[in-house]
Length: 266
Image (tube, rainbow, N blue to C red; front, side, top):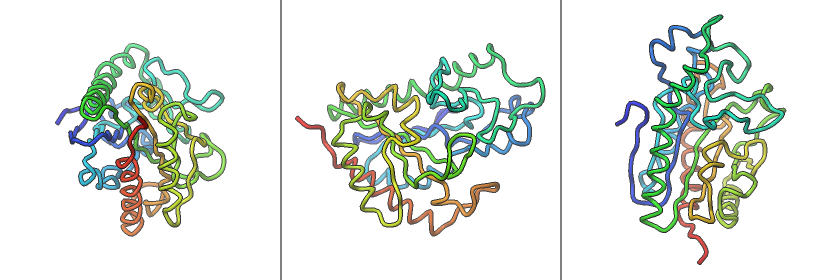
C-alpha cells in the first residue's frame, strides 16, 4: 500500500483507475484551507464500493489516497484546459466546482509548490498507471483502462442543465476501438432506468486522452456517473442511498462484464 495510492493487481486485461476517490489532506495543506476546501465536496464519493465487482471480473484497481484538491490526477502536468471555453478546474485547484475559494486569503499555492505537488503525488500515480498498462498488455496483447468518476448531476459553473446518468468518454472515439465503445453502449442501453451518452459533456480527461492509443493496444474509456444515482443527497454529508448503491453497483458490474468479454479484432 503506497501512501499516494492503493493498487490491487489482478490478471484480467482491465485496469480501473479512480483518481478522485481520495479524501485525505496533508496537515500543512489543510491548515491553509477554507471550510469549502476541508469539505472536499468535489470528491468522487464511494467509487471503491460501487466497483465491488472488480474482484470477480479479475480487474486491477488503482485508487488515489489524497483528495483532488491536493493535486488533480486527471489533469495534464502543464495544466492545459481539457475543455476550451469552459472553466478550467486546474491541476492544483484554487476554487471548488461551485467557484468557492479552497484556500484562505493569500495562502493559495504558487508555482513552486504546484510543481512540488506534481512531483510528489501526480508522477507516482501516473507511473503506476503506465506500469500496469504495460503489465496487462504483456499478459493479453492489449489492455483496457477504465477511468472511473462521479460528479453531481448539476454543476452550473461547469455545464448547463442536468447530466445524463452514465457519461462515457472516449475523446470523440480516439481513445478506444469503436467496437468496444459500441459494446458498452449496448450494455448501457440494456440497463433499466439509466440514461447514457457517449462523448457528451465529458469526453475523457487527461488519463483517457493521454493513455488511450487503440492502435498500440491500449483502449481507454472514462465513465462519469451522476451522483444522484447513488447518493441520498448531492451535498454534505454525502450520505449513501443503500438501495440506489446496490442497484448501481450491479449495473456497473454489467458494464464491466461487457468490457471484460470484449476482444480486439484480429
